[in-house]
Image (cartoon, rainbow, N blue to C red):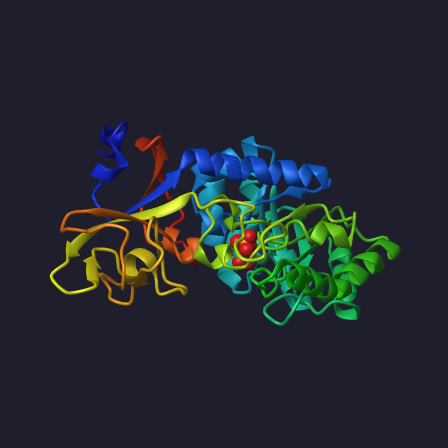
Length: 373
Ligand SMILES: Cc1ncc(COP(=O)(O)O)c(C=O)c1O
């Protein structure tokens, strides 16, 4: 029974163990809320980063206006666990997923669906009609080529179509720039982000001139939360995800006050791993490999050691190589790691241990883990 672990020292947990340091986690949430409030922008955190209703509840309690979801199965879990304001940022294109999305909208009137193709809008409209509802949708306006309708004429035409469909209500537009978030160096990231955002902004203005709803004008992530609001005071919210946990990928990008390390938020998420083998010179084997940390690059950072290269390439083992170490290690020692990329690492675990002052304060089930459909 996990609850019997309450009060346990984190160093006594069976490993690999996913931990979240509550003081840091709460500070990250508070920092984001304070900084966004000063810019008159709300947060609508992306729940793909944590897949955990306990985390979403804390984000909403701190003032977030809702959460985002990437997959319909993920959205269903959050809704079933009491998280109502959900914006699904990915379109659902298969008949069954469209049905599920509209069923979710019927059960949860605060569910909003993204759309990026005219036929998809017609299919959603038909499914909404079949469910006896009028469903809320936002137009996903592309920045780059991953997803979304191209900005400009096509986006405007899609919004106008949605506006005429009887079983859909247009709520506005979303525009997330996945390629901008990890641009290294704040100045470079800011310049690129603002430039890449211009077509979305022009599209927003065309929506308003056409009398279309722009009640939601959402975009941005952890790497651009303090940049995008500079582009337009019309931006309603940022879809920040990783800021609650942070990870090596984000630490590397540099921030406004520190070009080398991104220090706006601190790493709250760690994996604890046990040393299994130290027979071999300048090498340590641990019990956290690809299934505990994923193959994302850069490799995990060992807290307290600067010169360790951690290779998580083996399924069940991590292999650390080093020239010098701050201390000597022996079999059974526990190491604490900052994870390469928080989203997929969280997805490897059933629960995370919420730690305060080194002890387990709560165990949070990651209820939407594996919900990638
Ligand atoms: C559509 C969308 N919005 C927001 C986010 C959150 O981004 P981040 O974790 O960089 O804050 C993501 C992450 O991939 C995303 O795909």
